[in-house]
Length: 355
Image 1 (cartoon, one colour):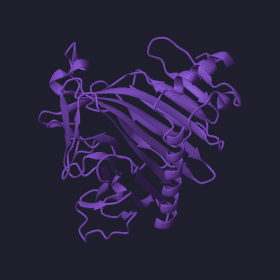
Image 2: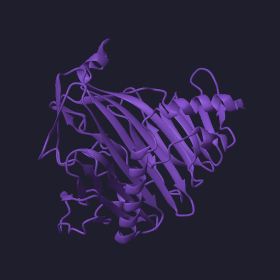
Image 3: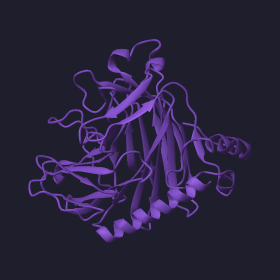
């Protein structure tokens, strides 16, 4: 596999293009000056279905066309595995690891085959994009993302990829004009930043939606768990601990609690090692931020917009955005620590909005 470096001119042209993408969820936009201060990233270019590699040591992004996957590694250890096979109903994060190496996501378990690691799904005009049974929806994704690797202004390794997604009825999956039948068009950007000193892996989830063109209006609804959800590995079942920004109590059974909150987190051990996972919701997301959580019979956490109680409606060509931040640490973190981290994220979002 041949590696070559982009010329400085090529890097700058790419940065101009990237500056127009809806990236930098963490307020870490890639700029020409930042690129110019770094050695150009190494890229492997190969034909056919061979892997495409983009790296700026110690971080590396590998697009794997043969497997329909994207992997992000740090010092040659996997941090994220993203699944986007065309036969899937939606793209999703299949694996997400701590800096120590523990993967805390479970994909397609026998009890709920439609639970896929970290995924986003709701109901649109009655079409269910969460469950994959009767009249399901399909999130069709572009196979090769726009992508880059860099360092944040603080010097942390960062990897970003952006994809177009068309929200379709399953019956339209093979239609030649399926993109014109889309209920929603989405541009989704995932931004992974590894802060090794803090022991933090931060995954920014930024989505820009446009209603239509396949309907004159769309109504967003769903069950009380529809949204950005993650299924935890079996070690968390019935044993993990949930906590939230409002310090609101959970039920004794924890078989499906829904609480209004700005963020929520789950902590437990994997192979005897402590792990904390948190989801932050932007206050600018439409609807009222709620979190669904459960422990019995399995551990789950989902950030929702309260669509089961208050649906959202948009006309064709209306635009809306969603921002979430998914954090993990190889240790238990207090509610006070997570609240301070949330406030820091809000400042990063505000700084981004002013640019």
